[in-house]
Length: 461
Ligand SMILES: Nc1nc2c(ncn2[C@@H]2O[C@H](COP(=O)(O)OP(=O)(O)OP(=O)(O)O)[C@@H](O)[C@H]2O)c(=O)[nH]1
Ligand SMILES: [Mg+2]
Image (tube, rainbow, N blue to C red):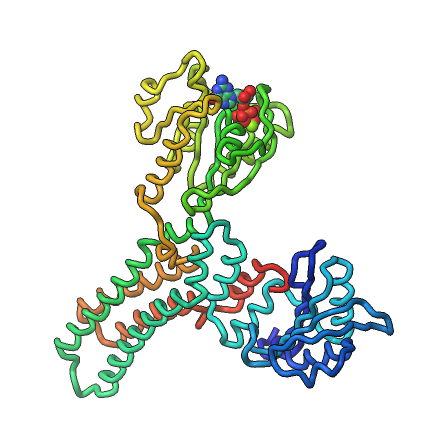
């Protein structure tokens, strides 16, 4: 669809969660939306006469029937979330009421908004760049204060300005080269190459600094995905409950209790940690259990961290060894559990083939080893240091990949300069870097990428 057409119509959606609550909000945005809602609104005076950013009391009447008593906010372009006119109808928070009001608004000619379409308009209308739009989802999804702070920094434009200033420096370099190309009678002087090299090195250093913290940033934003694996009955679900401090998963002494994955978030010093409890991994003829086992393996494969559990009251067996070899190459902590029982498997034995710093002895039953586990986790991902919201400047994998491409182009550019290649080659490398950076802010992102980002939003945002 053509972008301009897309921006022409009024879009509407229920912006509050569906369900019962004090209030529900139906949001409408686009040219002519005030008039549109006014046709449904009955109050002291017409909405068209209202000043911007005011609230009006009245009723929504559709086909002669009063749907609800409402407060309507009128916000006029350009100082609104989307930069277009916005009307928000605050009604009573029942899912039927909000739905009926939405229907009435659609009936008057608005189109049902796609997920994230209000924010997409804000982006297309130039109110925010792509990193700021992404920050909006991150704020909504934030599980800890640290994640929220990092997202707010991004919404305030910290990443945008970091990227834009690098782009500006690259554009300045391109302009300097173009100036030389325009006067071919002048050879490029050694001094010019020297200046170029300095400028390229400076930009590269900024890129590297941002990339250094990228993994931390991703963890702060998206959470550390941690999966608990091990053979049946070693205490995986007990570990989940222990970390959550609540009886979330069913624990029994019957091997094969957990059939499906159970996911929860915990907050470790501000770091959101997603913990996934899985079905014990073993060969099984039971179809349901088999599916659970497949799922456990799939989760372990994509996790940031694997917590592998062993039962200290049983000797190490083939099942344990299979799992150990399966998770090789992953960031792993091995927990030797049930150390309150008569030992059949010792830390000494495990230390023969597992590095000591990856090993922990715990007893969930006797509540031993909890602090050590949390400490090891922090060591593994943050070298034991505290984490600040600033570390999360580079928010997601998309940013990281684009920045990485930009860095490669700058490295190429440096080679081109150092080998004294003709100046238009330098310019080409710089343009590559500039394009990759532009993808981060959305200045040059293609529509498909943009659409993919906004479909992750909730309805009505
Ligand atoms: N003695 C002792 N028993 C424990 C400890 N941790 C867990 N258990 C017991 O071990 C049994 C199995 O615990 P679960 O947490 O259900 O084990 P699981 O690994 O989730 O098992 P599956 O879901 O079947 O794969 C239960 O009876 C727990 O009470 C511990 O530290 N010491
Ligand atoms: Mg279990």
